[in-house]
Amino acid sequence: MAAHKSRRLRKGAATTAAAALAVAALSASQAPGATGAPDPLQTSAGRSTPAPEVSADGNATGNSPYYTDLPPLNSPVPSPSSTIGTPVSRGEGEAGIPATVLDAYQKAEAELRASKPGCNLPWQLLAAIGKVESGQARGGRVRADGTTISPIIGPQLDGNGFALIKDTDHGAYDGNSSYDQAIGPMQFIPSTWAWAGRDGNGDGKADPNNVYDAALAAGHYLCRNGWDLSTERDLHRAILSYNNSTDYLNLVLSWVDYYRKGSHSVPDGSGGVPTHRSDDDLPRTSMPAAPHTAEPKPSKHAKPPKPTHPSKGKPSPAPTTPGSPSPEPTPPAGTPTPSDTVDHLVSPDLDGTELTATAGDAFERRIGARAVTKDGKSVAKVRVRFTISGDTDATFTGGERVATVATDAKGIALAPQLLAGEKAGAFTVTSVVVGHAAKGVGYTATVTPRPADKLVRTSGTALTCTPGGEFAGQVQVKATYKGAPAAKVGATATLIKSAANPTANIVGPYFKDANGQPVRTLTGLTTDADGLVTLPKLYADLFSGTYLLRVTTPGGGSVTVELKVSVAASASASASPSPSASS
Image (cartoon, rainbow, N blue to C red; front, top):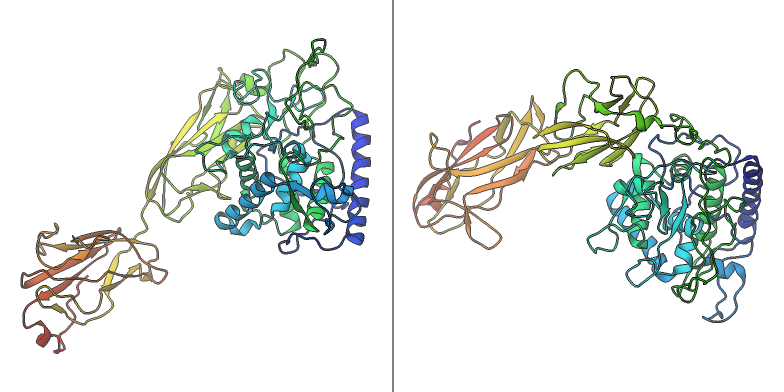
């Protein structure tokens, strides 16, 4: 919720107190519900303890308005005898979540359980946010694929009672080329959706007006920064990062508690929609609409509401995020914002824009950008977005590929620490000013493979085979680096022509591919936690002779194994030869 006039603040205090009382009553009166709940989630709405710090990367909704209705005090458990079309109590009705919307929340929870298991995201948190943001997509007015029947768009964030967020999407999502507006059932602002959006229904696109896409995006948004939502501190930080308001935090926690005590599915379009909003005392330029049985038809005499201009009345500043740089204050009409004065971004690092790290390690140098004007002056309080691009599994701390940071007093924004993945190769990290067209600065980052400086065979048993047969046993080698086991090191195995010619042979022993065809070079092998790698079985063709198998790793590790193919192989195998491996 954006910062509003004093009447808004008094109303917020009352909402907080009501939320605390509601949660206390819920805890005392409601029975366990029909829908299974995950492990206990610490919510504690209405606590008087200070709000935890949250990250400085803005928030999902731009502190847009939301529904303020509290959950009912009576049990959410539906009556066993209740059926569709039968009047139900408010508690039962509020506990019903439209079927497609509920499915989207639960699918998002399942995906996050697999991709970010340490986050411990419960679907009830998504349901609580969806209730507060859009009344569960206007009571479930969605099509079969999860797309809302009509777009859900919040008021324009023009600084008049709301935060000031100038257009960042050229009106592509919200139809407004002057200011941003929150969009979709989870009410993302376009600048956040640009990096947080996800494809949750598998149609190949990320649509903020699709409840599957929006729910999955909200889940990933809440799970960033390595947060564990089973802990109270991280849960509160995540919710405050969605909308930075203590009232909002307590309200969402109230609905989380309510849904955890019981919920059930109701037909799409039949869900209830809240009636009270945090901007009830302000003029509205656009807002989420209540559900209808058919699309509303405009009246011939009705006049659309006139947008309120920032010059009419004194705009209030947006609230600050605890522990984060203050947001840009709302300037008088026509006054350039700090972002407007930025001409370009430069690297604050004198060592250049190229950096390297070994797979699995953190890059020692931090990626950053300094915002400057045309005459080279630094600009503070400007939001800079860093984006990782390319075929890489590298991420910023917290597992995200995008991070937004505000510049400090020296005009410098430092991205979170960059972590190399296991995939070797080069990728880029670009930086741009959020909401303003200014030349950015890019970095080239290179991930080098994990090294191993020594390879040895773990067994000295001779490897022999008769023509057309199969070698007994498999070759296993151990990789070390500076004497320690080298885990997750890539290896290549090649049946070479000779010690002096390491190219692949065209006759002699071979491996088999998935189709059973001969293969004499294997790539993509990886050592385990102990530095060991076991090669697939080896086979012999009809040519007798002595052959060589060479295994190599990045960093110089190499071992050559001798393979003998002869009619008398079975007899010679009974001898006890010395190991033939060399490194």
